[in-house]
Image (cartoon, rainbow, N blue to C red; front, side):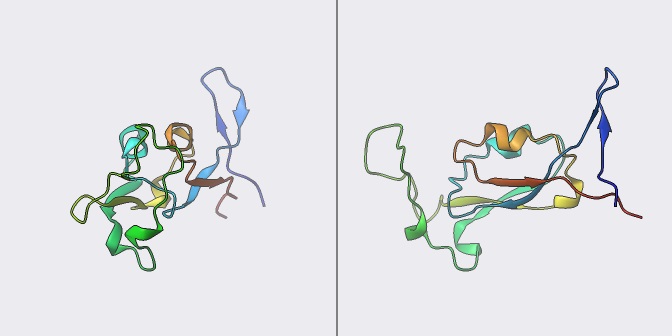
Length: 112
């Protein structure tokens, strides 16, 4: 099977890595990946809509404000989800912008 490849504007071949999963346990719902994605791959959803994920599961190890408040309340607890992974173009912008490194990417084989 042949891997999906692309060409840079300069004509160099590369193998894109497509988003496969989001670690919703680590996601802080900041929306940065949503903003940089050139496609409609992501959706911000209520944390309590994710089966098996509780507000208590969230742990912020690097609290940039130096306090113990995780910033979540019952009405603002959001987490990113995959809306349409098949629309991913493999640019990797989401992984580069994510402060919690929540994304898993993999190259894919071309459809026959």
